Length: 241
Length: 297
Image (cartoon, rainbow over all chains, first blue to last red):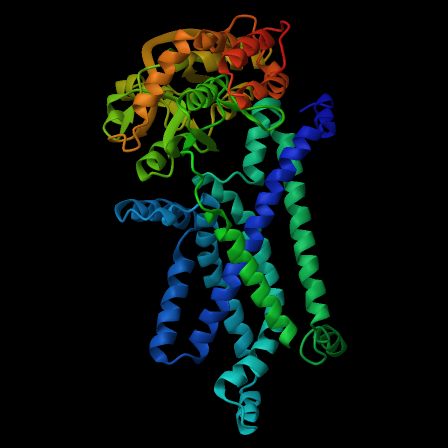
């Protein structure tokens, strides 16, 4: 790398490619977190409130997907689904690779997210549930109106950790042929041969994305914050110590 | 309370929609997926604007025009292409694949379209020759899954010479490591090695050619269930008959060719392909790549 190579930073074509890659990374991250969120909440509820067989099933699910390296999961699903589509000759199973990536990452993330939610659910004092039941709420109503609204709020800090983790893991998807930010970098250095410079820029983009995402989640935490439950705890802790 | 739950539902639905969005109904004309490791000029690489260019890809695009089907091109790691073709994730592998007996066991090849030898790249200032490049203790670079890597395994390492074979994701990375003095030599196909020498502006040189006489072919799934091979073979014959083939060879492998021109040439000339006029495309591409005057569509 020389001073001259910095001229590269003025090249709009390179930025355009990086932005395209960034867009894929962001789309993938948002989609997989969404899939993981829905499944994760279901698994957490099942683990805490489900009858024994369901709780055990959910735990088995969670252990399984937490044990799978994401790269292995990507490859198994990608080729596995194609194989199934083939022998049973079902054309709709020929999923686009992006969908396979969302599925693999979504399953993986749901296992991690379920533990975030499980922790958040267990943080709610059982007394509240007793009170709700005493007021005549059904079990479902108790979950819906007492547990979930509080647990989802309590889960935001842990969830923001999950966000910053999976954002970077998405670079694995090139193994099945989705070109995201990191891969765009490989492509750009084919022409420019500026490995160091290009990857410094990519590092900064990841930093920016992490910063932006966690900042938005912090805003969400404040926006939906409930006095006495979230947010104010920081001040309370500060006052004591 | 409700807002947060509604928010969760919205995000979930959006995510599912994004994920499944690609399941749109199939178009009427047949569309085949061509997979290629687009990191190997002049056969396939990504130009400065991020477009997929190169000899293999142009051959694929032109055959598709001549035979009346459509293609999409997917960039995939070289060593993932054959498994993807076997699984039906890709319909055609077009990535400068050498036809080997091993590979023939798992996929079917088209007629050979190119002959190539392996060449040995070193740094010009290293003073190494084709013998000393493979001295015990040296590090030799190659791309994972290529015949170049296989050659080093078979003819150097398995002969008891203790070199270290370093495998890379793509050849440009191996070349970069060679320039950075991390390894002593790179073994890769001749046309690509020539491009690397040019791109390095004299830092790298070819010290020798290994006459492996490899033949490249396009590959499809074993048994060719989509009946692609007759179309590909026929298409190549038609290209040769119409002079398209020679022009493409001239465009990518000619002596006066500067591969950096491709960004401009592709941007100006791809319209010919959109107009289904491959002859005009190839003729003007050859002129453009050699720096001569050419006609835009």
